Length: 198
Image (cartoon, rainbow, N blue to C red; front, side, top):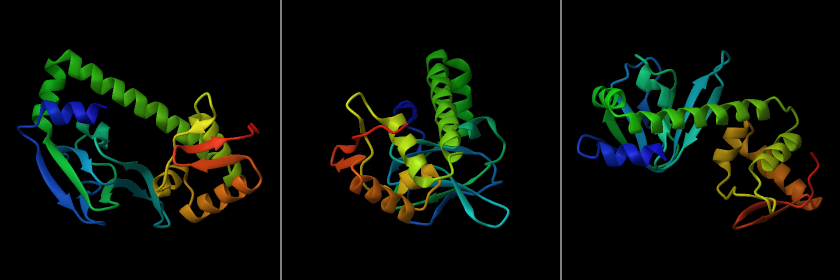
């Protein structure tokens, strides 16, 4: 994970801070002076729709980078708020930009990470275009399932609900229905697809 690489490479110049639930790491339109990496807890990246409704862009956990593309921007394009008690490491942007320009291995690792994030976003867009919650969840499970049919999704599921663009109540209710009809089985290892309907 590129976050771990950055934390290790820039340990001497990162500053860590602890946030309570609801605290802001940064706000939209603030100047980009640091790149933030989650050390503990969860941070939610969001924008707001025209009607004021929050739209979740990412729920980031430990060693995940927040707003990766901001390294090349002048201002943040979203808000980053602590979803739980959390700790973040703030890496000054100027030394990071210089290292990305001078160190091909670090630059490639960062580019690989950005490419992975782009693919994940395209998958999320594909899933969000599926209107029915049960069909969206089936598709998401099928995409994440390993050869044995297990999708490594474990509780708590609120972050996954946000990723799917569903309320956690709708996700829990739909999973319960899929379990009752014998399509899935839940365990501590994740959710197993028992019947593939796609």
